[in-house]
Image 1: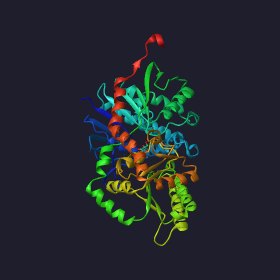
Image 2 (image 1 turned 120 degrees about the vertical axis):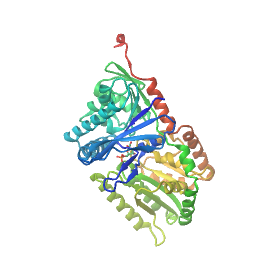
Image 3 (image 1 turned 180 degrees about the horizontal axis):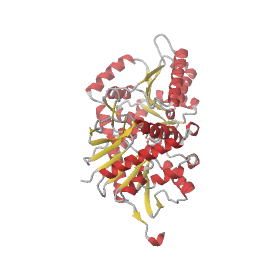
Image 4 (image 1 turned 60 degrees about the horizontal axis):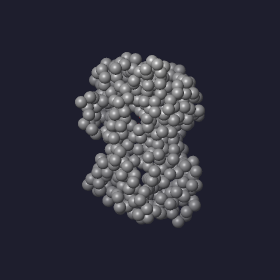
Length: 469
Ligand code: F6P
């Protein structure tokens, strides 16, 4: 059986620099790749930042079905590539936050070097003709670098974040380099057709390359393009959320949240997640509906992320100030309207919260997909499922057609939708939930990976016949 090589910035686990403890990584990419179960041998290669002179061997192991291996990289170089370019340029720009972009040439050189480092490691590892699946915006240059080193490989690239409008993309000082890098792949995939359309427009505007949303011709090769919305390991979420350990936590929670309607938010504390907008909508809900004060609670889990980037530090302060303001204004001795936790929580507790909540509120300003919405649906009880209130600026809103969608910038409307979500009958909740669960059961992370990899096998770059060039 042919092996899959999967490449991403982050491995499914990481080693704590001070304690040496191995911890599971969080985030959409890790959860999607970790959810693939198909018996095919898979090797996951990712970066392992470490201090110069650290003699310990590269991190290796097995997580679920996937073997993983770290490629050591100096922490200083990694910082410039990860914080300097990936998180301080590409992440904000691709999420339409152009004002937050800080580009500098030295960081860019580090980004190039780290992509090269991985290209060398993969070229040394991969056998001729193997399939290599490269993930996400940290590795935009890798497809072309790898093709140069080993043209016999089948190279796929998948972007886990939105591809922005070409009007935004064109602001990037390294726009040609990025597109040339991606175009080294045989297959390029996105979550959604709108992202693919933006990519095709950028190709045309920046490189003068035409495409029909199915393929593009570049440097004598035909490259396949497609939309492959990511999914989760639905059955596992569904089954695990019914395990005795989860039931036990759920009983305890039901006792302590007795008499309250619960709106749940689970997000990394990232500006793209729209936490300020979420809190403002919740404040509006209470201000306009005094009868709900004391009746409804927002439980917001904010998972720490990118904690040394200034804009994230500032966001944390603003969110905490807003939480304090709402609790100060509407709270009572025996009631805090917002319960706010700045931490990640154990998996069983997460599943119990999914089951406990009446409603999940996702108010992302932009979000490639948002897998929390999918996980929430998978965990619900079929008799009295919770309702998903979902920003229309998430990739998930294109696939979860029965969710209640919101424009999170419209705080008043969002508060009305929240009120509606809390007042739906069980029958109405079931009507919304069933088709979405059915979709996720029929199309899970394994199907997502299979559809991408099948296309990759089939569509390995065909040189364009000379008469057409
Ligand atoms: O695709 C976006 C992503 O790479 C996801 O894995 C996750 O949502 C997030 O970014 C994680 O970010 P980081 O790896 O920087 O913590």
